Length: 370
Image (cartoon, rainbow, N blue to C red):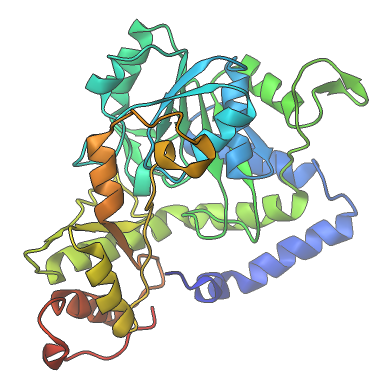
């Protein structure tokens, strides 16, 4: 699904120099590299503040805490985004309020959100697509609720000149290696236009300290982006827009090449969609998966089990029905989509997809190893 070796090969010298710079400095946590990346990433997102943290899930938790969410608060979110938001808000003792999605975009449906009672909204920009932020912000304002963006799959996506992370009261990013902007390990950030939110998150990421060994807020974490990852991300950030364009080009090639009556293809419409994942739909997904596996085509499912059906909840949400969410979770399948995927591999994947249901005797391509 990704080729991280090929992704990093053109940057090998710059990445080695960055890591060596950190080693030579003798400073490995919350130093100049983190401060420099925070400044650059905040500017990229179009906000004044970025706070580096240990990973994307911590970023969601600390962003929610930063806007005042805690035990017993009700947080509206979707249930088709892998469970990361649910994990974060449960760590805070908050209550999930699952809202169904727009079936065409797989993101939060603002009209259904307006029917709920909630203290905050966690908006996931899924697969690289921005959710309908203008409508969601309007609903949230009527309810007097802050909005936190989960931008883990949408680095650089924009609408009306505003990038992901610049719309809500705070936003969370993941820098997991396969993200559009990925580190060489785990990493994350909270971005915000609010100096107060930023200061609260800075304290919460390091024991609740306002100065060393002086705890003033909590519950807090030890969740810090380290100097090595910050240095790596600083090298990679200037390439992000080019990588996003390459992802969108892969998606466009799929759309032009795949012709199958049983499949629904996504609209990957830049700049509002940055092609983090290429996710099609098939009512007979298991058969399609078996077919692709037989022809050596890498694929995955993002995501097969909605949050409200996860075993961790027992029967807590047994009566909750989210029909669009549940249909999507039963049908979605992801094809390889990354900046290094050669055009010939895209065409081979598309040929394998088009041969689905036609019998192996009609397969004219070669095994794919994207």
